[in-house]
Amino acid sequence: MHDVLIIGSGSAGAVIANRVSEDPNRTVLLVEAGPDYPDLSETPFDLVNSHNNSYTDHDWGFNYEPTRGREAKFPRGRVIGGSSAVNTTIALRGVPEDYNEWADLGCPDWRWEKVLTAFNRLERDLDYGAESYHGDAGPITIRRYPHEELELPQQAFLDSADRLGYKYCADANDPDDYGAGPHPMNKLGRLRVSTAVGYLAPARIRPNLTIRANTTVTRILFSGCKATGVEVQNADGSTETLNAHLVVLSAGALMSPKILMHSGIGPKTQLESFDIDVIGDEPGVGQNLGDHPALSVVCEVNDSAIINHDQPIIQTILRYTAEGSDKRNDLQIEQISFAGRPDGPALFSIAAVLEYQYGRGELRLRSANPSDPPIVDNRFCEDDRDTRRLVACMKDTLAFTGKGALKDMIKSITFPDPARGTDDESLAKLCRRFSGSGYHPCGTVKMGDVKDPLSVVDQYGRAHRFDNLVVADASIMPFVPRANINLTCIMIGEMIGEWLRTKPEHYL
Ligand SMILES: Cc1cc2nc3c(=O)[nH]c(=O)nc-3n(C[C@H](O)[C@H](O)[C@H](O)COP(=O)(O)OP(=O)(O)OC[C@H]3O[C@@H](n4cnc5c(N)ncnc54)[C@H](O)[C@@H]3O)c2cc1C
Image 1 (cartoon, rainbow, N blue to C red):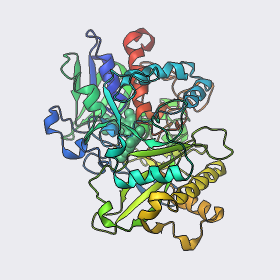
Image 2: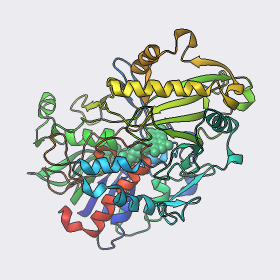
Image 3: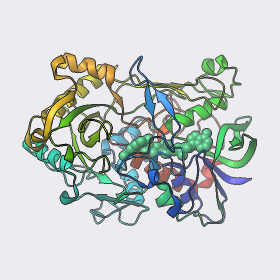
Image 4: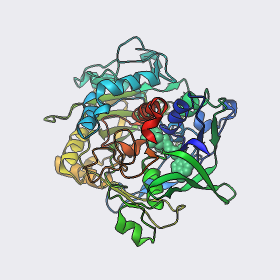
């Protein structure tokens, strides 16, 4: 029997495993469905190589429906380190208003001044570590590419941004700033500094931490309303029960709600339709799915020598506010260094991304079989407030193709087809049909006030209506912050990991 059993070793789960096992008197069992690579020198190249995402070798193979009737792949890391081990290594924080809005929704301990402590603790910022809003001693190393290390399309993006009148922003994580500049990134050269590298590598020598890889949790077990452990499936197909005093669910925004539903916690009618015994009717499980809808402008370049599929896929960002919007920094534009296939035409793209989302999607079970993937409907751009601002962002993105160094590089725009029109109505149709995920699903096990019918856990991650059960990952975010969410997931691991370490009595 372990003191704490953590399901999933991703951006949040690996951090919690580290923080809780700092107490030598508490035993921690970290259960991960994917493989482990304890010897870093034997880590496969796709996990080391942060110049591009790893999409297949360590992936769950899920699909989703971004807009009605259209299906696409939805990558999620299945490996020690979770999605932090396969991602693009953009290390951006939300704006302070995001966390203050969370606080106003029944989570006062997530106010900006409080989460800032955790953001500072998690990072070693090599450029701005001395600033009061940064850290210089944390497990995740963060750095920005200096101008001379930027690939040509990335340099050109900043030149065009300047010509279009956007101000330069040296540190996109300065809480008050905005503009175009280098992305803060958790990579060193090619090396991806995942939570497996930053948090688990130094902790795995602790005798009170056990890491059990290739072990898939099928459901959480309960005695009445109290979690007592989990049922797992091993790689050889055998099943087993693992007991613990406290279960922490950190399987990510797609798997955490799914595991809860297979355990009998979720919308009653849905569970009953699959003959799953209902332990608790929780209408919020799987609802409130948030993300960042995005659409790209794809361009063929004049000189194919500019495009190299082995260069860093991204290095720069523009954070800014839509005209008339009261949500600061609600839009992003990013230069993607290459697009398409290496053996195809020489392409790059410029991504328009909506950062403050009003619409919500939904995740449901496909069947009663825990091995079946979930059904994920994002329903992007069904809320006109989202469509309107993504259209504005697309127009601003198209402007980059007509100004400065980017204009000089571009031979033609291949998407959206200029012949089909770039007026508001044409672009709105495109957004409603083709916008896709920024790969930031969240919100499906919402934290908040117990009076909110959709909230499942309180602000400390504790299940409202079940004992000895904590949820801590992207799924608890009340809504998506205005930034790529990996750093916020690590921050969630830091916040809840520290509470678990310092106030264990609050959790049992
Ligand atoms: C391709 C890609 C690129 C991205 N790029 C960026 C980026 O550049 N910057 C950024 O900020 N964000 C990025 N993201 C998003 C970000 O990485 C994720 O939102 C974040 O890592 C999610 O953290 P998490 O802890 O919620 O879940 P995860 O990190 O996904 O961790 C969940 C873990 O639980 C395990 N698990 C799931 N189910 C079970 C089960 N039944 N039993 C046992 N284990 C289980 C999984 O294998 C996984 O290890 C990207 C995501 C992807 C996929």
